[in-house]
Length: 250
Image (cartoon, rainbow, N blue to C red; front, side, top):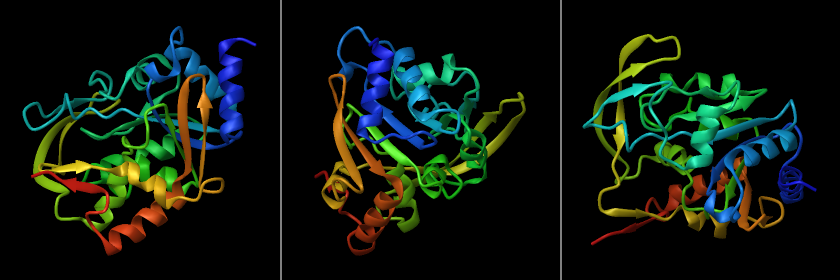
């Protein structure tokens, strides 16, 4: 069995099925030596099949921000790892959502729907963002060797409740879309000054087996969670304690 077949088999054993919509947060290093991003992406494609949809974050807040408010659909890189960046730049038929700081890339059956509405939002992870649409489609979120801390979907849930630490100022971003059209788009930025994000705490709220599955892909320890269950459990928690998923930094 070659490496792509092995990874595909392990993804299926973890709980990924043909036709799924899966949002993946990833760490290449966690998989062990000798693995390249294209092999991981090929295994996902095989596991999901033609009716499935693969989504990876292409967040660019390190490159596009108040000090450099320019976003280019093709040329603004992501800052969330080599697997995500290889997906963005080296995979056929990948489309990217239009958001200066929190875009996602997707390929597959529902890719256009997942990415098409992001520009309609006035916040990074709003009601038309890929994070919300993955949940609405009954999707899954896979944390591939990176733990459950880098969980951007939690920002989308936070935005529903607007906790006192979340938002900063409005910024006018200079956007260039897929067709080369340029325009200004303003949205309210996130501001986590004085807090540490603790989205890993969602693990303790999910039921293992039905809402969350754990297992290995190569050397990477993984969590596969049901997006709707996460939104429900996290939303209930924000309703009663807006600071549950952060620590205050003195």
